[in-house]
Length: 328
Image (cartoon, rainbow, N blue to C red):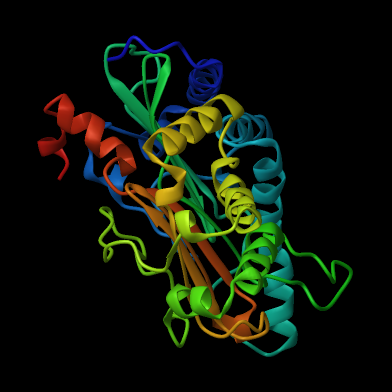
């Protein structure tokens, strides 16, 4: 695979996956485990829906603890808390919808699904895992003691801001919105003209739940044409997304961004600057893409994703090893 140093968080992830699998009954393993090259691995989605995998509702309390332990190995400190809050937000959303007389999907914090692809004990072959439910999709691939992919990485929140009830004021994903607004406000007239690529925000992130990213070439204002203060804001915002993964992996992702040229990242915006109005942004440079959309429910419903154009689901790595044709 590679001569690069081992990643401690990859080893912790492998152990956590083994412990989770060892806790399952045979009937549960049938639902939770797929071959690594099964096409199920590259299908991902973020609305509320029935999914393949093993749901929290079908686990015993000790199994749930092990499932959460596995999920936590794939998250940085802040992202761990955000993931738990996103799951519990289903309860708040359900109550808000009932009080408003809205009949819609079942809002259930137990409808989050864990899936293992391949064998975490086989160091000679790739393996991966997914945790997915409403507004969460985590997709990891590993080979031996190394990560080979950590994207797509999706977090969303509905409501983006809780405005009623005992949790009023809760904004789970506030940094990725607040810093973006600060960056947009810092641009001069010419920069804003270049940054705004659409007068209205799209209904959703443009890459949606595609298995392969398809986007126009970089649009907007390049970091190379920003002031130092603006680049600092952009760096902070990129850090919100890169920092979602374990620290050793995040450091590796930062080194890659720097080596490929941080100044090549482009900042693009859609919609008005008023945070109460629907808005969208994209950070795109080379294979690095972040999308954020807050349009639905009166601009109080966030979708955000971090993707690697060539290596989502380890596509690039698998191509190198002549395995990709089994999947795509």
